[in-house]
Amino acid sequence: MRIIFLEERSPWALHVVNRLSAAGHEVLHTARTAQALQLVRLGTVDMVIATLFPGGAGSGEENGVNLALAAQFRNPDLVTILLSDSALFSGGELFEMLFSLRCVLPRPAPVEDLLQIATHFLDSGPVDCVGDSENAAVCNHCLLTDVCAHAEEVRQQRLCA
Image (cartoon, rainbow, N blue to C red; front, side, top):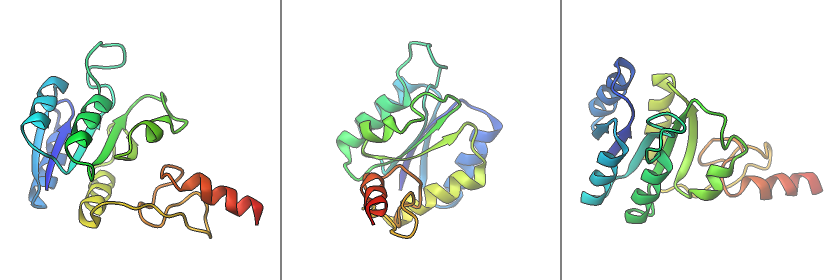
């Protein structure tokens, strides 16, 4: 699978790239959004792992959402994982705006957590989220809380039951 990884160069980022590469994925790592956007224009990717604000909030640089939007235009089955050290959009707005978004993790995320989540989505193929009636905030397919399109519907059903 082809993965674009938009993150500053650091020992943590190198560790993520090495682990994903060792798992057999082609990882295109860049610290600049403009370069990541160019890579998306040159070919389809299966996953975007991107820092929400690569140059820092307020830097004026394109952000991880711009990258994901460009990538999902070329691949409707794209999976996006955003990394953020900001509470901006913590109410779930990003999930409404970006249909490929499956997860927002703190930055830097624990490497094992990031790899486990990325591997799950890459191995599972396109995600069709379906709520779990026993636990209304957790999706049976993506295993994330309050992020899939069905979470609100399932929550309402549970409240009415």
